[in-house]
Picture 1 (tube, rainbow, N blue to C red):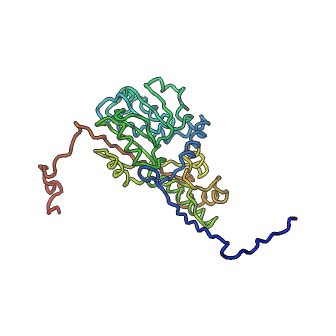
Picture 2 (cartoon, rainbow, N blue to C red):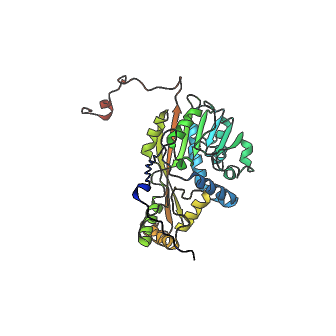
Amino acid sequence: MKPATLRPFLPRPAIRRRILIRRNYAVQAPGNPTLQVFDRHAKYLQKERAAASVERSRQVDYLKDEVAIRLTERLLDINRTFNHVLDLGANSCNIARAITLPDPDPDPSKTTSPPLSSRIAHLTAADSSRAMLYRDADLPFNQEINLTREVLDDEERLPFEGNTFDAVLSSLSMHWINDLPSVLAQINHVLKPDAPFMAAMFGGDTLFELRTSLQLADQERRGGVSPHVSPLADVRDMGGLLQKAGFKMLTVDVDDIIVDFPDTFALMQDLQAMGESNAILGREAGPIKKDVLLANEGIYRELHGNEDGTIPATFRMIYMIGWKEGPNQSQPLPRGSGQINIKDILGGGEVK
């Protein structure tokens, strides 16, 4: 054993003190400040794993297919053809599949109508997950449309030139974007003048049943709360974000889709197979503990269960339409140019 050594005492003048004062500063990267909420790499891995199980992934596409159909139906209100359309965050090309369906017009007076693909000369489907993007490349709908697939490094950075597309569509992808204002501004940049942007995303109270029951189960079994369901944008915010990005003639509306499941385990298995698992930065590592899952099952049924023994899961869809400004675009009439008094419509009294 090495003997301990003692540092000899030195006369005070021989001791040199060097005081080093160092200040550290937090430095923001160039550009506007961005709040990072989601782990984009984790989301990429979730989608890659989900697409690897092809048949299971196709079985749970019921929600993405339904939303893609509802979104593309809105193209029927635009009386024009599109030379080049971008599907941003294409997933498994659900929009491409939707626009090749026959008789898309829901008007019962129209017994037949041509597929929407007849109005789109070229569709570019872009997504960061190669496995998900090419999952259905061998299915027949690929032969019914001029479709190009493009793998992106990240949906938050668009590699396209300005004034490239006659329309941009996005279905169930933008709810995982960290910097929505930047992405919306980039979309506006790649659109041609007087071209529409149409999107659908999860928002607001999506999966509020699962969110509340997991919070209560966490509190009961662990004495605290951990975020298991990702935060989502509110419909009240989207109009302002679109306007800030430069879009005109905005339309934002909400639609709830309620899906019944046999139990919470089936719900969470479907979410995982969709590639829609939690991807919050700083989330708890590993799966949810068994005792929390069992408590969640009972709480969910008690608070939200259906009479037939199933459980409902609410998916709140935010649909939005905005137009890039163009020289020939319709403009609102000047203030005070109205010819009809609102009193004549509402009837009686002064309107103040």
